[in-house]
Image (tube, rainbow, N blue to C red; front, side, top):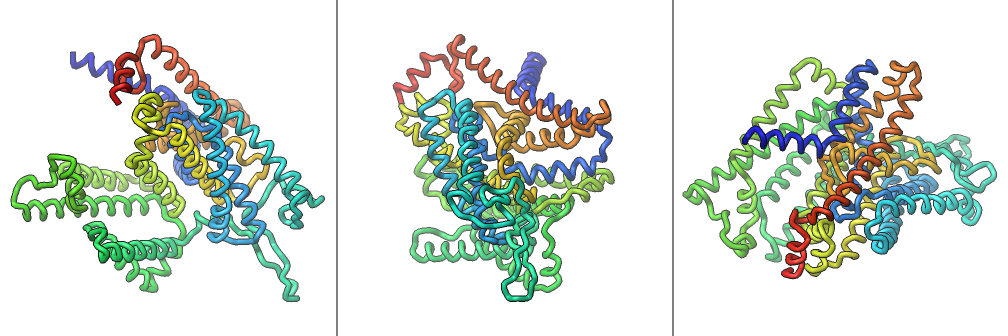
Length: 539
């Protein structure tokens, strides 16, 4: 009986992850055939992860809210490119240029997301095809704006950005900047609009300084709230204060300040730092749990609340302890030790030293992962989850379904806008009329490769999918050259694969949607339709 259970679980795992497993086989075979060094492959894949990760993660919220795969992602990318153009036109460099781009593009993305969400509410059940067609429709207005309005209706005289006739923007914009003659009579030139690598090349020292200032401001606000007796100071606030003080002190040392002028770290150093931070955090949880346990004098403290009112009345320190599990912390510490031990294997160590990690860009990706996780814990996130499971039950529970769906689309469109800005500053050039066209296609394909479906997608699916999908993108041309003496075959193959993955996912979605009504089973609760109708009535 036990063996049969394991067989069923294995079959279920293979069936649910067939696309991901197929890609693992294809990628492994392509790596072997291509003959490329693993250092080159790993370096390219991690570079692509930093460039595309934010865009793929922008797809998660609509899936959570039951809107399916957001083919309208391209509209958010258009908003990002519009904001970037005007920042370049103003000649603003580096981080300020990216901030100006974001300030211009974000309101546009919010407006576009609101409009798309309103449209999708009128086309419930057909959001994906609507998003695909809407992307082509919006692209027509985008082309009209950049080809005719700019320079034709809105007068712009700029040799570095406009076509020779003065009407329409150039096909390619170089984010390395354009040269402008100085007006001081010296005849020299200055570079303006330098935005390439604004995030990727941000010095680590400047990043730490900005974070330290943000933490200090946060603690000052918390202090005011404590003085007004609207909040209490907890262990996390104390830890943040100590960390801010230590980092500020270290930045005053000239040698460290000089060392932190670099803008990236190799993967080995990054992994070591991450493992140390995780280990220290878990050790702090263990020590604090032990101290509180001794203070209470019992094996189990009163953090184990017996009623909802007890949970709400818990202090931040008690909630912190409640979440800490000694066995789990010890297991994490053991896992950190094992991973660190693996870094001493020569081939692995060589590959890790070759990979470069742009710190700020990866921090932004980690930030959107945390945001998605945090959103699920909020009321709006729970509403999105309920709407995604069943709009009938959501309506019966008093949730404004249409409003929740619109908010989900606005969040996704804004994240897509920011993701496109991150992508472009990393790439270093903008193909004005085509850069956004395949954003949704490749992002959706990467998400599906990671094991996501039309109804369910997680951060884990996105991360796995990006690595697998772009690994194949890196090695496919060389594999095609080795097999058929033509690298273009590999190029066509990877584009074919991206469309094939999307087609397979949509076919599976349609197949499941056809089977479940025949069985009388709901995807929400796993019960039959009569049971679900009773649930809705009771709600």
